[in-house]
Picture (cartoon, rainbow, N blue to C red):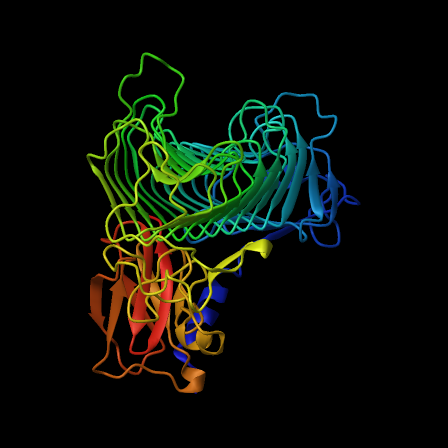
Length: 525
C-alpha cells in the first residue's frame, strides 16, 4: 500500500504538469521557441514568455545583459530561474545603459533565482524593489559598484546561501542591503573582501524601518566597514534576531544604531562569534553624523551568549554600550576576552538601564566605565585553539556551567543543545564531548518540516517507511528560542503528514518536539 506521503507528492506533481519549462543558452537564438532543443539566446527573452508556475533553465555561459522581470508568480506557482551552479554568468562589463541592477525585480511577487553568478555591475547585482515573496539562493555576486544584493521596501524575502564578494566597490549602500523590509530571512550567506569600499560597504544591513526579520549563520569577513549592521535610520525598526553569525576582520563586528532618530527595539543578538575586528566586537552605538539629531533611541536589546575576542588594534574592545539613549540593554553569558582596550564598557554614559551579568571578562583592563557586572567570571576562557581561530571551549574552561538560563538560547553556534552540563555555558559555544555530539545536536532530519521557512502553516512529515508514527497520546509541542512552549496540538494517529496552523505565531525560530524527535523551522510572516 502506498504511503500518504507518496500520494501527497504525486498530487503536487500533478498540479505542475501544465507548467512550462524554457531554456536559455549562449548558443541559442531569441527567434527560437525556448525549448531544450531550441533555446533562447538571452535571459530577457524568456521573461516575456513565462507565466506562473514556469521555470527557466539558463545554461552555462556568459550573458552580457540586464534582466528586467515583468511578470509575477503565485503562491502555488512561483516563477523560477535556475542557473547552472554559478556557471550561468550575467556580466555587466561594457553595458553603458543606466540600470539599478543586473537582475531587476520591481513591483512583482513569487519570483525565485538560483545558482547565478552576477559580476561587474556599475550599480547593484540583484535589485529588488517593492516586491514580495522573493527567493535568492545559491547565487554569487562579484565586483558590484553598489550592493551585491539589495532589497528595498519588500515583504517576505529569503536570501539564502549566497556569496557576495567585492560589493560596494567605490559605491554606496551595503553588500547585502535590507531596507524598509518586513518578514525577511538572511541566512548561510558568505560576505567578504570589500576592502575597497569608500562610501558604503557594510556586510549585511537591516535598516530604515525593517521589521520582523532574522539574520543567522552568515559568515562576514575582510571588509573595510562594519560586518552586520542594524540601523533604524529615521523609522521604527524592530523585532530582529541576529544569531549564529561569524564576523571577523571588519571595522566592527555587529553594530546597532539609530542614526537619524528612529526607534530601534526588540533586537536579539546571540550565539555570534566576533573576533579580530579593527575596533569592536559588538557595539550599541551612537552612530550618525547629523548634529540636529539629539536623541537616538535604542531599547530592549538582548546580547546573550556571544563570544567577542581579540578585537581592537590601536584601540578597541569586546562589547561597547556608547549610546546615552540606549535603555533596557541586557548583556549576559558573553565571553569577552583578549580585546585590545577593554572587555565590556559603557564609556561616556551611566549604567542606568543596562544589565550586565554572568559574563566572562578577561583580562579586566580598568578602562573608563569598563565593567565586570554581576556573577562574572574573570579568568582565561581556555579556548580550544585560538591560534587557529577555534574558539570552542576546552574541557577545563571556567566558562562551563557558569552561565544563566535566563533568556538564554536553547542551542549554540554549532547547533548543539543548551545546556549539556549542570547549567548553561558562557559564550557562543556549549562545551560537549565529541563522542556524544550525535546525542545532543539538534537535527532538521529527525522530523521533516515543510515549508521551511513557513508562513501560515507547517506540515510534519513522518517517515512511515521506517515505522515512525506518532502514538495517539503524543502531542506536538512548538517552542520559541527561550524554551517556552507557544503551541501544543494533538497528534493525528496513523497518518504520515499533519498540517499545523502557525498563523498566530510571530516571526522567529521555533523548535518542534514530538517525543524524543526534534526539528526546527523559521516563520517569516
